[in-house]
Amino acid sequence: MTKDMGFATVCVHAGMQAEEVTGAVIPPIFQTSTYMQQEPGVHAGYDYSRADNPTREHYETALAAAEGAEYALSFASGLCAVQALVHQLEPGSHVLVCDDVYGGTGRLFRELYQKYGIEFQFVDMSSVEQVAKWMRPNTRMVWVETPTNPTLKVVDIAGIAELTAVGSALLVVDNTFATPCFQRPLSCGADIVLHSTTKYIGGHSDLIGGAVVMSDANLFERLKFYQFAAGGVPSPFECFLLLRSLKTLDVRMQRHAENAEQVVQFLARRPEVDQIFFPGSVNESQHEVMKRQMSGTSGMISFNLKGDYAKVKKFLQSLEVFTLAESLGGVESLVNHPAKMTHASVPPALREKLGITSQMVRLSVGIESSVDILADLEQAFDRLGT
Picture 1 (cartoon, one colour):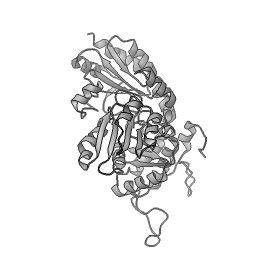
Picture 2 (cartoon, rainbow, N blue to C red):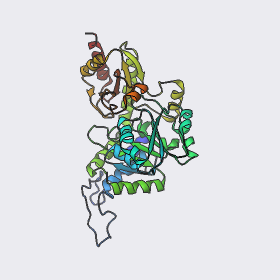
Picture 3 (cartoon, helix red, strand yellow):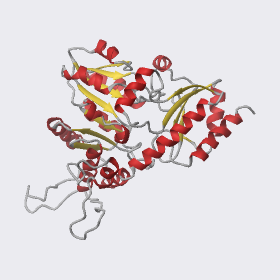
Picture 4 (cartoon, rainbow, N blue to C red):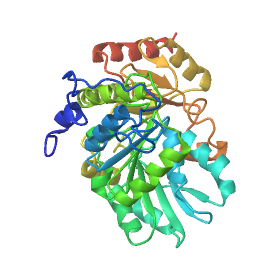
């Protein structure tokens, strides 16, 4: 039903079908761990919910459709999804990772998996030529976030896909910030799309989840086996909430993006702001890449505040509409201090190299009235002068 339909229509209808017994428009939550069998090994397609669950299948079908993919697999957290992909690698594998990757992903690679004989090399991926220099014969995976977290650099997916296509490396793209509303990595040549569904996909700051999306059948079967064997699956209730949230993804993302654009314009006029980080703003070449592969910029903005950390802390504590908290992508506006919060686990030398300083502030602009968002930022800036 959703083939060749618009993105908003896909979000509303994919994975949905009326319940057969009652005709309920919204399928019920199959809150069960096990299923009756007619005889040993003979059942209606379900035997245990770690393997399969109808609610999870509805959600995974919808998420795959949103990304323009054949398959999706959901996990109990974004980092569970990350682990599913790392477990596809053999000892001796070399992995290229964008240098300002999400702090939790970098921590997982550095502190848990290096000891298994997998080498993770963190490199600047702001140009394809830079990535090409670091490719090796044993490079088995290239791990991209775009836009990056928290410096919002844009990575050329199609350009890197040309590099991985000539070897045996999988191209993984973390699409958490852009979402399929504004970016479709598979259409640019990526092999796998990753999401922390905790963020914009869930959209309401009330659940934890992750997902991987792909169109290759063999890759899907390997990852499906891992999902079943390792067992880090979301509950049926979480899948129901994620499926419900997908229905409003398009309208939410449009509002996030509209509000963020206004915030960027506002920040550009404030003398207290030293530098703004926003997709496509780093340089002209990245702006051109953004125009090719993205149709919008979501609600993520970072900026450097002039002054010392005491001034930054005063600003953070003065905000009222923005809540100081970890995470992003909820309907409410959040503010974060990357150096002390989301990216505290990044080695200090690398943080300094990336520009993740004590002056950096990251905003997740919500869907509130833009007038109230801007007024909140203005009063927090004004308090710095008192």
